[in-house]
Length: 138
Image (cartoon, rainbow, N blue to C red; front, top):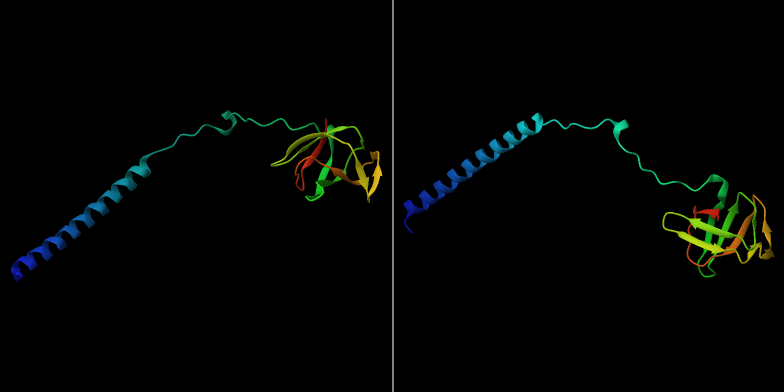
C-alpha cells in the first residue's frame, strides 16, 4: 500500500474522532439544559393515602421470644402477662407467623402449669421462631 493512502486513512480517522467528540459533548449539553427545565410537581404529604397494617391489640401481648433451641424445638419466652397450659398463642415476627396451643411449659427444667409476668419460661414450639418475635394470646 502506498504511503499516500496510509496517510489519508490516518487523517480520516483523526477527523472522525474529533467530530464524534464534538457531537457527544453537544448532546450532553443539550440533555443538561432539558433536565434543568423540567419541573416535577408533587402532591402534598397530607394528600397521600397512608395505608398501615392494623397492629395486634396491646392487651393481648403475652411476651417476647428471647432465645430458640433448634435441636429441642423450644423457645424461651419472657412473659409480660400470665400464661396457662391449654391457652392458644400466636407468635408473630419478621419471618414468623405461628399459632399453636400451649401443651407444656417449664422453668429451670421443672414443668409448670401457669407462668407469671416477669418469668422466663421454656415452651415447645412446632416450628422455628426467632429472637424478638412477639407472643400474643388468641
